[in-house]
Image (cartoon, rainbow, N blue to C red):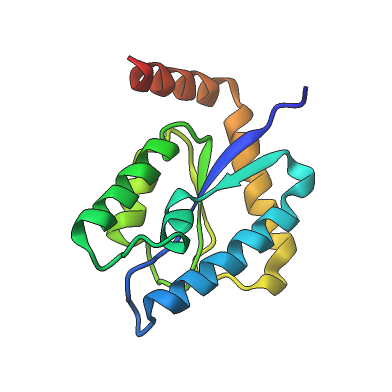
Length: 150
């Protein structure tokens, strides 16, 4: 079986930069669909547990539910090979920073990228995968995973 990489899509949810939660969710859904399409031939499974939680009724304005969503994403991130940051924010939000920090791999930062940049985006993702495949990085990832599993 071909090795499949696991990538956590991270994106802003809370209102920021003049955008509402609904606008951020709509943008995240578009990115999720777009990333799944352009990575179909790259053996990548893209996950984003917070998006599912929000779509199923979690309330990002509730501190308790927001924290639960971030913790769920951090847990998933610890098992991912890399993160993919998307959205229109100029930088990673605090929640996105926490999610990425829990991931043993690199962050493919696509913030402020546009769909017409498809080939450039695909190349950034390929670079991330190539870096994951290096022997040194594989040892770092194994060590991080072993620490999480203890």
